[in-house]
Image (tube, rainbow, N blue to C red; front, side):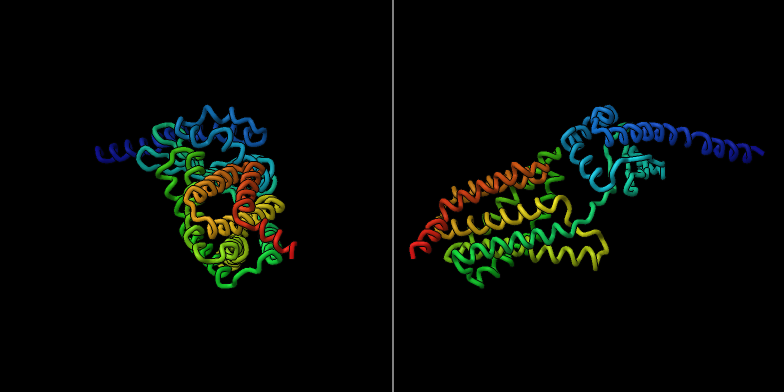
Length: 331
């Protein structure tokens, strides 16, 4: 009899005590989700700010929220409603899973609470495919290649070398983003770390290989590898191997402009390195490129493009391309 009473006691505890804890966090999660949907639809960040822990506010500030909102609105449209899916616990961590319905579909969102504070938000949003962006990047790069062909015919081995460099860097550079999660605290600092380490690596590699070679061809090859070979490879991998949406998003004209300007920048900077073996020049161009990449990652596309154009101007002034055009016209 006593054993039955004890079993009944624990059964009551399990049935009554746990739901109380679940309801506590579910209520907090539901309140956040209501304000989150309003904030996403109106752009009012102050609706969700009180729900966030101090650490999460540093990572998801108004700027990051605006970027997230723009991305979500572009791919899903106005958010309509949410529904609770699941709750899981691990130590002091509580994870609440929801599904959000929007005008153009639905996506999952996970909230992570630690010691009663909201410390993590994970959105399972997927970008709207834009294969036209891939085509635009290819056309932009080929346009630059054709333009420089009339100034100075590329050296095929150096062109191939540049494309190989691009493929090699595509394996190395993603690790910088992973490292930034460890060494940088905020979204801004991570973007700056990744951008400047990437720029310094790219420029150092160009500086090294441009010695006693045709720098213009190496730079053009780098653009071909980055915006043509990798674009096609990514398209094939995502669509036909991994069955994922194509990995090109955003406005098509920006994809075209960045492929065009960055290919020209790579060509002119490498050509400059082949003539001027000056480490200060390397640091200057790496700084310009790093700022441009950081601005691009923070969705400041206009300033980013202007910085790339500044780098092109430096390359035109110091790389001897203007002299080559003048000499051609004189002949």
